[in-house]
Image (tube, rainbow, N blue to C red):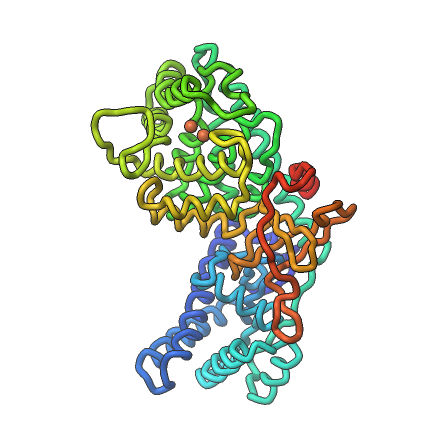
Length: 489
Ligand SMILES: [Fe+2]
Ligand SMILES: [Fe+2]
């Protein structure tokens, strides 16, 4: 195989070759990160340092033999190894997340390593990169000069890559694909629910196919589906809610490293968690004001109704039984409170605990169930975190915040220039500074929404725009779904 960044050539790779690139690229990213970290902690004669340097050198030589030269480069928020995208995580603690952060901070797109690189070069490379990170004033030109001064002849720093029509197209295609799957899920759920309400046996082939497609998209990159969960003001809320809970659950399960089969089972159960609500009178479900006691009593029956509805209409297999368990348990709290009332303490199933978190998050941010006014996602997460340990599993809660980020997609933020930013994606390296669309200010909306990365700093190292506070949805006379849908057009 020969290394190339040409997407046309790379599209001719077989799946097995792509898998090899991905495996090798990930190994290189991991070892490079460990080496950079170790070189911060130990002197160059320390045995840990020597061990990590040797490992990196050995790996580089094996890969150089195979590929000729090696590139690790970031483009459109993803890491590429020799032009092939590799799994990229958005957590700075992870190896790939750290490299994304580092390249962004140094204002470069990556590194190219050639045959001839020596162990001495690696030691110098670590020093130059770590010093540049600490100084915080690096850019491509300066680093290029330093590489030349330090005689790093076989390692090249790569200039920043700006969005081209090619990689923009890929983003658009992924967005459209996510949107299609998401709305297929909603429509399919509608027809399945229709059959369940009529007590007809249901065919779940299409549902399973859609859930698998959601799983595949989350595993490869959950960004676009998470963006879609911001569609909170959709007309057919119950279907949207169930689909959102399904997407969140798969994302959280994926962060917990569940297998694809487990993720599909979890997604399936999440999709049907509220199915018991189809047995409640519509005037309760659509009631615009708070429930009275009698209505609450009825509402608390929906988990039991859910089990009955699923038992009546679904094939009696493991998947359906797990869905029944989740439907029954999703309103139980960790401390034994919650509903429906049972006379013995239960050890909750992992899937039920996952769905419970995703359910409350979506319900409170949409303001359509349990509480009539929507709250900002940031506000909801803060409240939920306070209840971790009593109501929610604390570890799962932390993972959930990492998954949706501190400011999840759909959050509205007031910025220090009085403009309003709608969060569209979390940031690779910084959960506190997401990517937003500046949609207007508190008085009016702009025609064209500019995309701004709030983690960008100016020449003196300060954030170009600061977040003042999260804006509650009811402060605005706008329908945010319009904006979300526009970006998926
Ligand atoms: Fe529920
Ligand atoms: Fe729910």
